[in-house]
Every structure is written in C-alpha cells, then in structure tokens.
Image (cartoon, rainbow, N blue to C red; front, side, top):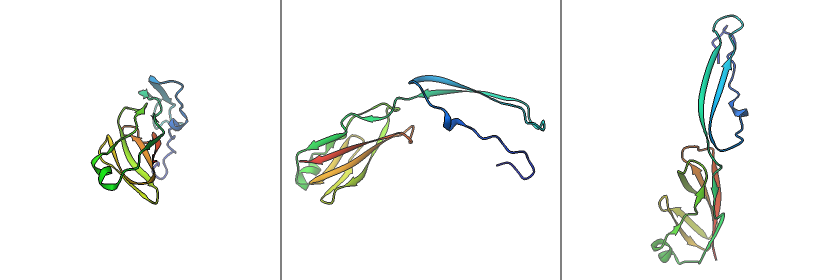
Length: 138
C-alpha cells in the first residue's frame, strides 16, 4: 500500500481480463496522472501469450488389477494432456482405501491394489491451470 499520508495507489484490474481466443496478444494500459500532480500519466504495453486450456485426453483409465510385485515392475503410462504450455507435473491427489499410487517419473504411474486413484496434472509454467484424471483397477 501507499505510505501514510500518500495518496492511494490505483490497483491493477488484470483479474478482469478474459481471453477470447488462443494466441499472442498485447495489453496496452494507461494510468492517468495523479490528481495532486505527484506523477504524470503512465503508459505500458505488455505482450501476452494466451494458452489453450489444459485438458486430460483420457479422463478415466482402467487397467487390469496387478499384484504389488507385478505393479512395481510394470508402471502404467500417465494419461496424455493437451493445451497449456506443454509442460505438466503430475501428483496423486487421492487413492482408494485399498490402493496406493505414486508418480514414478514424469511419464509413469505405479499403482498397487484394487480401487481407483485420482491424479492431477498442473501446468508447470502456469500453475493455476490444472486438469484431473482417474485411474481404476478392474
């Protein structure tokens, strides 16, 4: 905030911006001069990259149940994603009461036991973008 006795500093309203399409854009901004004359008009141009939404291609994957020893030897490929910046990290959000899971690398999932596991992909370059998937043993 502003120091005591200084005029209030206008706040950015960027949260109100919404993209209408994917691609490159620029934001031209103008801040009028302070009423007390403490600063003149300010202008800026900010280049933006609008990314497509992050989406998991296979929202639910079903795999055959494997015993613990076999599951560790044969990790499952993670679902594929589209959109976003192209770089995602995966984490296990929730495992069922009789299952356990761990992301073995950026490409594989190790699952033990029956039940289902919820996964979340988060865009590394835009962490506010994420998508969910479910993996179940049949």
